[in-house]
Image: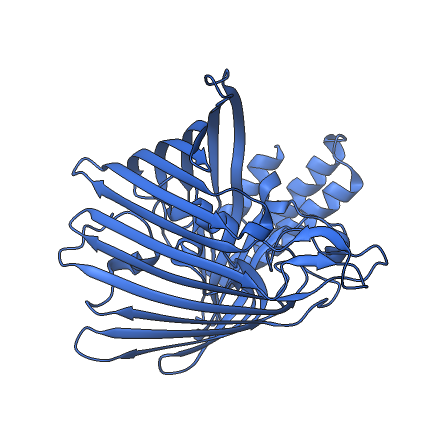
Length: 435
């Protein structure tokens, strides 16, 4: 019997005695495994048997998680849902007279393991998301002990009173709607230039959330956050000040189906118009990185770190009705002093805070055969002090949703200009699989 058959026995709850017997046989016959690997698998086998004896396995369907466990006494649950995205990129740069030959690239853009559920009672929920792809874990530096950044989310959510939740841990801040929408639920293959240049992303800290009804359908949601201010997986303390975020959302036409205000494309085909309006204010006190949560640390030659206050605002909207969807966003970032200087306050270090503003407009229509046509326009303008030219992007996308966002094929074509001049054409083809 091989390891795959052994794990199969565990899955269907065979007796502990039989599994222990098979472990001994495999350990004696498969010398290719190291002692460390064998020990790890043995411990895994035993823990799995104990887990199965203590839990009930709930039936599930594709897209609802690979495995679902609920304790017999209903004191905890675990859902496991792996997902990944693969894609190809073809890019043509403009050289002043014509477009060059294409550059091709094939990548695993995202590969993630997601665990969520409740602990002790349904009022205590949690989420753990781990990244495995190169893009997911890149960013090692001295402030995270030069280790891969595997952890994306590790957050506890406590519903401590009616309509009130307290979040603690590492997760996305309540920033622009495009960023908070999961990468699993995007309408185009990836997010816009607005998001990549000005979003506030994940951070470690506390969040307080509240919602209330202002009428029969009118819903208002308030979100507040206090966080470390330097992004995810920082382990060596807080080099600057704290980060403060406040977001207000208004849903004047009632709630979206299946949390559709944070999922792109109108897959639920809202029968009545649904609208979400959002406003976010973010203040990162004494920020030490060029984009607050990301970018280079602004380190001086003497080893100290330059810090300056950064402020970011977002105004956004999400609208859906009968297969049509629209998302609009405006972002603006400012800083007290954009140019980082040495300890003398005069000599530039070479680091510059990325400031400016951006507009992103995106819409799509989902046909009855679950084929969608989508388009996006993005304009990014930087402050002159950053010495970065303005960019515009025009994107046209074609999607086929086989099982909603859980299994889909996407393609898009993007035309980019810099300072009004032709710059690049990019074609992307991608596939998503989410259990």
